[in-house]
Length: 381
Image 1 (cartoon, helix red, strand yellow):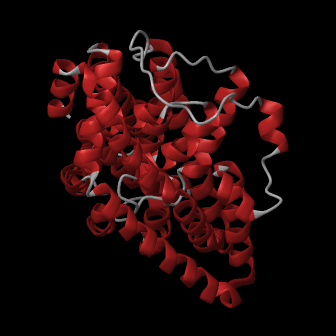
Image 2 (cartoon, helix red, strand yellow):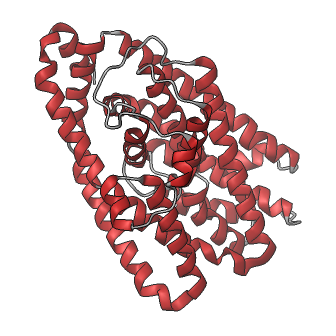
């Protein structure tokens, strides 16, 4: 990123050369959006739909996950709207939609008449709702759907690998994008990105206070004891920037903490799909930062639809490398947000990814503890 920024600052005329390289990288990201979202959501909801078989624990698990991620979504929205780190950045770039849809238009087109049409047009909300419906249907019919669910998981794994190949080109694509952006918009872009990084860390810390520590205190959980068992998975997640990598450690530590194995087996794996609070915060903040930086005014109805879309699309994609950028690349064209902003965000992601992933894991560890206390569990020494 630094090299690209320096080149763009010293050689403003490089933009016509750098822009095609950056756009080619972004097109590669866009090419994997539909198969990733479709197959991962179908598989996630097909597996997660069995929560109904587990009675009140399953219901309370869903309530906790949805409450936690909704709070994370609203917190990120509130912080980025209040502090507005993108104001004055002057981001310029190519947009792929002439007019952002209003609430009525989005509501009318939520449900697909054809999956293939939705995939061809990149209508992410239609793809998401179709995938959720199919996933729930698979869960309802049980074993008969197992071959289809395994097929979706197989396609999803191939899409993951394809995304890894694309992200191996990130250094080239991001450097070109930063060079073009700085050449066109000036050094203010870097100042705005620096403000965004600082606000992102502050928001994640605030969520840990209000969304993790306070609920644990309300459920009378000892914070020192919780941290003693959550520290190892948190450090793994922070160091590897992978929520999935911390899962084995988290399961072992919570079992040592005294939680029932059945509850751990239900909540922790599902939390990787349904309780990604750190990622949820980042998605909403990144979207509205780019809107501010590009001086795009979104109506309240458009903002609410963005929040709804992000809440749905954030489910089930924990295993995708740079999953946040796949989701954002699917969303930006629908609201006339420049994809150049996405590339700029990718350049600073290394500064945000550790804390975002760490918050994912801490929230995922806190969930089972709170749910256990909610259902009457008492720790035995």
